[in-house]
Structures are given as structure tokens and as C-alpha cells.
Amino acid sequence: MTATAATGRSLDWDALTSALSGIEIIREPTQVAKLSQDYYSFSPVLQAQLTGKVADLVVRPVNEAEVLRVAEICVKFKLPLTVRGAGTGNYGQCVPLEGGVILDLSRMQAVRWLKPGLACVEPGVKLAALDKQARETGWEIRMTPSTYRTATIGGFIGGGSGGIGSITYGQLRDRGNLHAVRVVTMEDQPRVIELRGDDVQKVNHAYGTNGIITELEIPLGPAYPWAEYIVSFSDFMSAARFGQALGDSDGIIKKLICICAAPIPNYFAALRSHIPENSHCALLVVSESCREPLTGLVREYGGAFCYEKAAKDASKGVTLVEYSWNHTTLHARSVDPSLTYLQTLFPPDKQLKLVEQMYHHFGDEAMMHLEFIRVNGSVLPAALQIIRYSTAERLQEIIQYHEEQGAFIANPHTYVLEDGGRKTIDPVQLKFKEMVDPYGLLNPGKMRAWLER
Image (cartoon, rainbow, N blue to C red; front, side, top):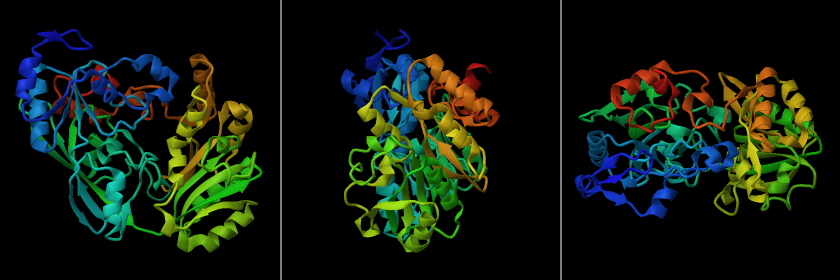
């Protein structure tokens, strides 16, 4: 009998591992510690809260039947279970607060089928691999995070909200962006439940707190010949308003509009030679067929092309995708690890007055980084500002000022589901958890609704 890492509970680990016989188990401490982490280190607040939180063991099933066995055993032993994809999240979504078992689904990589506009996959399928296979049929993934090469589809649905492609297709929780999921429960006798249509919202972006996703049906979009461009501007607001205008240009087919204020481009080592010093820039992924109208828009806003990569060279060298969204933060932190970030949704406003106010108010303390997305039919800027961190108190002051001025903050400095982007308890997700996880074993400590029920 030994104790679990986090709770001190006595447990017969020999009996547990015997019950899991035939399923891959990892108990080597270094590996377990590595697989108990994500990129919460982006947040100095989360670093203080989550450092040292580790599981007791990691289990790597290869199919749904093995997931059912793991679920049944964890319920029997009353062991916390935390689901993990590739661990590319930033909020401690897959960090086990109470030890127990990490359920690593990265070996479940089957693409069940591809149809025009639709794919059925297991949760461990990497987005880049699925995209490559789909493009061979003339289709592609609608949206991806900047961790495109390493992230899994299950992790993206469980912990993500949008990304490259959101300028066209909105966010993951928008109706139609997730068609169906199969979910394993944590009842005394675990079972598989299929959720379709609007019912998928019961587990969409729930951090794996109320069900283990073992299969997903996701929509695909038409595959375009995507070209990549960097456009430089001498003035930030010209760059920002160009981004808004491009987002509003429905006839120009685009996948990414990322606007970075100076000095952010200085952090892009592989791109620095292309971007004029002290300039602001737009990182763009646009259909190659739209080069001419894009050129006219660039000229209208006083920009200048300084980098171009043809669609035929998409697989060569760097991709601008990996300098956008939270990869922007990653590159900045690789130069200065003291930097952190915010996530801000600005209200719809074609003139971007609040963006301009925040840009001038905070200066280099909150370096402006915009990602234009579609929300309820309108194009608006979501910001992932890079913050020069000083203290937790000052960070909270920055957050509070944004909120007082009418900007929505999806706080990336909390691991609690509802305290990040939700802000409110989701009664549908809570009700589903009460049904499928009656003992509260799934990723405990992350859902405020469960803790306060």
C-alpha cells in the first residue's frame, strides 16, 4: 500500500496496475511529471499555483475499450482521472490538481472516415496529420490553434476556443463547428454516450471535467491554395484598421489576420530580416487567388509587402501560422521569459476606438497583438497582448481597466473553467457532469460549478 502524490490516500498500486494489465502504463517519475504539465508557465500566476502538481501514473489506451477499462478501474479505486492530449494548452487544463491518473489519449490516432465536408476521428489525431489527409480529398480543417503541428483534435475541442480560420468560421462553440462526439462516462459501470447537434456543447471546451471524448465528427472546409504575406506599416492604427477592413472584405478568402505592434516583430528571429525596423506588421494567410484585391487594400492603408510565400512552398521553411495567436507569446517569451499575456475580446467597432485607447494608454507595458475573428456574424479583434509583467496586483489592475472600459477579458491566469472565458456557470455542463461523473473524479478542482453546487 502506498499513498497518491497529491492526497495521501492509501492505495494498493500493485492491484491497480494488475487491473490495468495489457494497457500501457508509465510510472517513471520524470516522464509522469512531464506528462502532468502543459504551457501554464506562460502565466507567472499559474506557475506559482501549479508547479509541482503531478499525477501518480500515466495510462495510454489505444482504443475506446481500453478507455472504458481505465474509467471503470478509476471509479472502483476512487482515483482522480485527468484527460490529456498533447499538452499544448496554456491554463493548466491537463494538470492534475489531486494526483491520480493521467489518461493520455495521444495513441488513439485513427481517422475513421472522411467525407466531403466532414471527418470522423479519434481524439489523439494530430491536426496537421488530419489536415494533410483531408487536403488530398480537396478539403481541410476549418480552424486550428497555432500549435497546429503538435496539438490533437481532442485537446483542441476540450481546451481550445478558436484560432487560425476563425476569421471565416467563428469559434469552436459556434453551432456547426462540432457535429458529434462519443463520450465515456465515469459511473460505477462506465458507458459510452453519443452526443450530436447542440448536445455537443455539454463537453465542448470543458477541460475534460465531464466526460472522456473518444471520437469526434468535425466539419471540414474547402481547401484553398494558401499564400502567406507580411505587410509592414509605419503606424499601428493603420495596421489595425487594415486588419478590420480585410476581415470585412468578404470577397477576399482568408485564414489569418494577425496584427502585431512594434516592438513585437523584434521577437520573431526567423522573420526579423524581412520586417523593417520599428515597423508594425500584419501576418496574413490569404488564398493565392486573391493577391490582386489584397494588393489594392494594402495600398489603400499605406502598407507595404515585405514577405511573401507562395502556396506551392507551404511546406517549406517557417509558416506564419506559428508566429500568430499564442505562438506570438511563445516567441516573445523565448527572448524575455518575464513576459506574459492577456486575452481580450474588443467590442465591434469599425474604427477600433477602444483598441486605440488601450494602445496609447498602456504603451509597451501591454504590447498590442490582434487576431481578427468572426463573432456572431461580425468581424472584430481578439487581442493577445504581450504584457511586461511586474506583479500580480498590477496584472489585475490592467485586467480591471480593460473590463471597466468595455473590453471582455478571457483571463488566462486561472485554471478554473468558468473564471477564464466563461465568467458564468454553465448549468448544462454541470448537469451532464452530475450524471456521468457522480464521484467528481474527472479533472477535479477545475469546474467551479461542481465545487459550489
